[in-house]
Length: 166
Image (tube, rainbow, N blue to C red; front, side, top):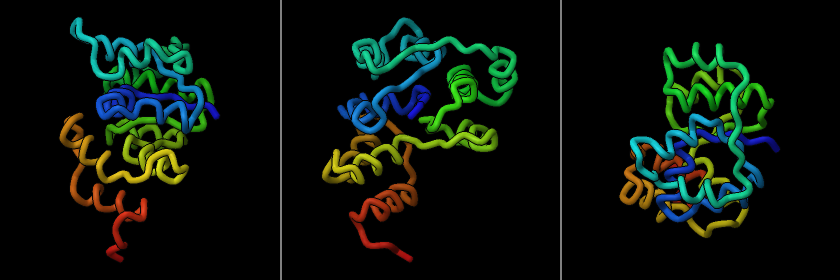
């Protein structure tokens, strides 16, 4: 399985101590150089930077289709644009991305996209975590991840941690 990740899933999973779930679920992850640069932005090591540096299962790759990435930057930041460009170049099976506009563009281009909440749901489905509710709470409170109440509740329903409201 070819998986390309944007910055957000890396930083948010690292911030809640669950970075390893990426390896456990997907084996290898590819990131574009722009994502690595974002992990080091403003002379700071952001959450996930040290984990990426130490993880032999995360590879940094330069994109080849620079014109596509440049065009995508009209609506997206550099990391998202390069993530989509790399995913298309590699014919990725999955793109890890949280930002709404980036997800929509990736899906319009035929890519399969999942965000950090979906990663946690998959981790539970594969018995890698017992429950996602404390992890969703950590995303909100430790990582500062915006998660609206409807998505929070739907994730818990999908994970079987609360009854469905339907």
